[in-house]
Image 1 (cartoon, rainbow, N blue to C red):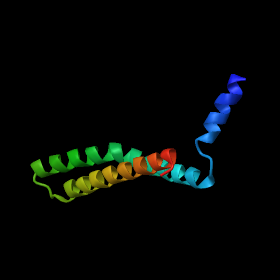
Image 2 (spheres, one colour):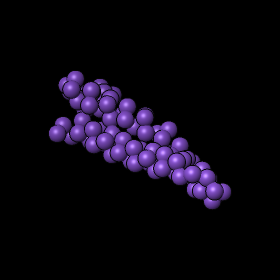
Image 3 (cartoon, rainbow, N blue to C red):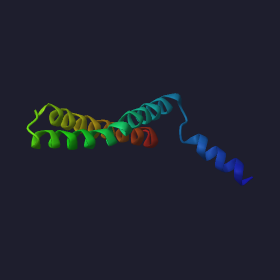
Length: 88
């Protein structure tokens, strides 16, 4: 009996198809942001090391742009996930 109630509660979280779609989009954004979350600090570190050895600023700028894109994707993903969970 308890299992049926728990199953109904889990299914009731996403009652209509639109909230499921919004939740999936949020998870896609998180999946895209995950590799960038690890790669962008590495690229920034490489950029700073290149500058100290007399290199160009191109890699550092690329790393900073990757960091901004990562932060934007994570914020967008959390916004969509919360929107789907609270039906707003």
